[in-house]
Image 1 (cartoon, one colour):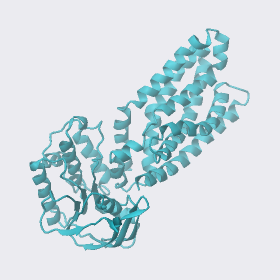
Image 2 (cartoon, helix red, strand yellow):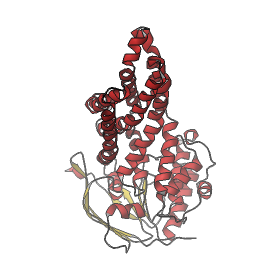
Image 3 (cartoon, chains in turn red, cyan):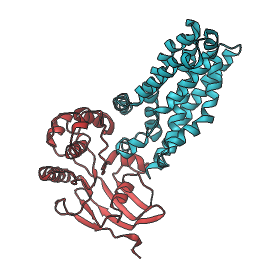
Image 4 (cartoon, one colour):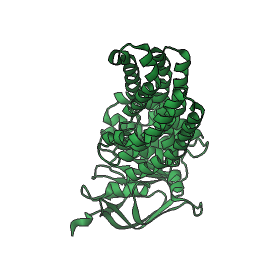
Length: 213
Length: 217
């Protein structure tokens, strides 16, 4: 069942500015399929900014390159093919229910007609949810539903911003399990966390406040 | 196209369930029905002002639902997911704006038939007003939503939208009222109105898409 992702990612001297100041300065790192990068650092050290830059939402200087054998193409196309972004905000439609959200994401995020991901029903089970209206769900349940988004459309690179904050212990274990599976299939994880997200064999990248001097 | 269809379905779920359609519709009907009370029951006066008055309250009712149209999607993280679909940001903006027209403006256009009939007293006049609104409201929705996207860069920019909309809405009001009032130059006014709507549909999604991208950086 494991999908074989073969995408690599390299960051070369990446700096991200916010409000006219560099919050991330000169980050260089190369990631292979199956790698996990854990971003650590105090609040305001630019973990979210770096994740948003990789997802194409924030302006940056330096190079972020995807190695997918597809030849030169628009960076936005590569992002749309390979990246899942799970931010602090879950991106749920409050007026949908769990299952319709997953059907929507599958149709929206899958490339072409492929049905390579989990079916929405299976994905809902995989994150331990019963179907129901989004507005009735607790913060933790909404986070679980957002995690199910990663499963209905297979993409190589998961960007997770503090993914366990709203989750209970069982939810955390569930997410760790999903990440292990994802990496076993050649997927890549880039996550920010304050040490609460126990995945193994990670490449640690400690971000410092760039304006410390 | 699959993605676009999925997006429009989700937009419909999101917007039709929200307060904007009801607020706009309620405002329009109320303002229309109350007109004889504030302006007096003179049928000739009401019939004369009907086209202009209905157009005015329709234009304002389009504005009331714009609060946070794109801003809420950005704040909730929904826009981030949409942008990872690979759809260009103008296509995302276009779907939001089209659905806004469908759930906010179209009910107003339909309600304009009885409201206009109430004021003008003739079915022909009511029909002319409704047709002119059908042609003109796409421009109002597109322009208003684009201004909302741009004003989103500013915190609490909604008040700004109402003032900014004034000059942009003026051409639609001028031509729309002439078409609705079946003036001598109704045909050319109608063509101008249609052209105004078409150029808004063509240009506004590009501008709004740009504003959304800026907004998220």
